[in-house]
Amino acid sequence: MALADVDTPALIIDLDVFEANMERMAKAVRAMGVVFRPHAKTHKSADIARAQMSRGAVGVCCQKVTEAEALVDSGITDILVTNEVVGQKKIERLVRLAKRSVLGVCVDNSGNVDSLNDCAAAHDVRLDTLVEINVGSGRCGVSPGPAAVALAKQVAGSTHLSFGGLQAYHGRAQHIRNFEERRLAIESAASQVRETTKQLSAEDIVCARVTGAGTGTWQFEGTSGIYTELQAGSYLFMDADYGHNEDGDDKWSHGFGHSLFVYSAVMSVPDPARVVVDAGLKSMAFDSGMPVVADDPSTEYGRPSDEHGNLQLSASSKRYTLGDKVRLIPGHCDPTVNLHDWYVGVRARHVEALWPVTARGAVF
Image 1 (cartoon, rainbow, N blue to C red):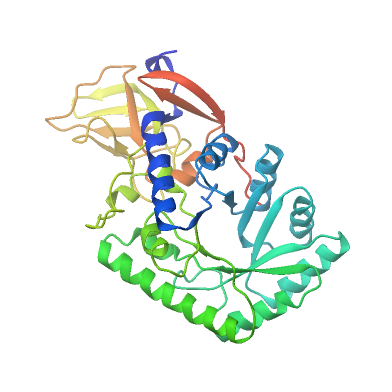
Image 2 (spheres, rainbow, N blue to C red; image 1 turned 45 degrees about the vertical axis):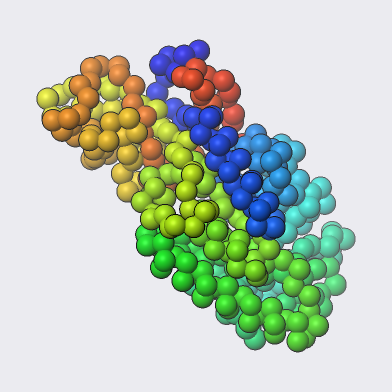
């Protein structure tokens, strides 16, 4: 069917831009000599995970156990849960999942290490376990250095856990707008990781993997000489917020385009300066700001409610009539995706693919 006939609101992907984004990242990580494990919390899709792996990704990251379960059920069987899994029921599900997939998990607490080991022993599973260190995000993670080494020693000495390396993701750095400030933030993170690996080596503990990085900083981790695996996810879609980051003058900084849109329709034309579209709070996330009107940059989206959004028109805006379709670039792609059941893949303004959002609502 034609794109114009797709009912709204809908989550659409420009397949040409989407595929170009995948190819560009795949080429870059190969040139850097690092491993790519993109984060599936961005897309929550087994179809997209397969597309990434067909281009060289070793597997994917997930943030929650149920997210990993949904992808394993759909045939994606190499997953790192880049998060702490706490609570007996969740740990039981994680360990059962490790029986039918290559699975890793992160820890930052001694008690959690014991809980994971006890459950893994009960199910006769050996669980790959990474120590998460706080390199600036101020979220999860043990302090770099001695505290991280002590936890790694506990993991390595556990009967049913294997020390898999370090998780070192600097989430706060991803949206630092200034390119040089972002680079310096990752230099600081890499320095903390490097010192921690030296201390691990002094204790005869092999750190085989250092994983992290996001769409805002991946080129810095990838060329750091200390990170071995990159987790960038939003590069696929490039939401409006990532679009505000400044590029640098290095060869890695340019080229990703916006490929994800919320397709919306004009449902009311109340006055010459404003029209109302049918996509609001239930169709996209607003935590990172308003969406951008993709094909009419002089028009601003504002004042969302549950099912409505206002387009504020300027003198240079397009003229809209009832039923006109509008592509909106969401401010934050990850939680926007989680509001939809399907992706509508579009090429040359015609529908080419429908992909389910495999792990929609998988938040525990």
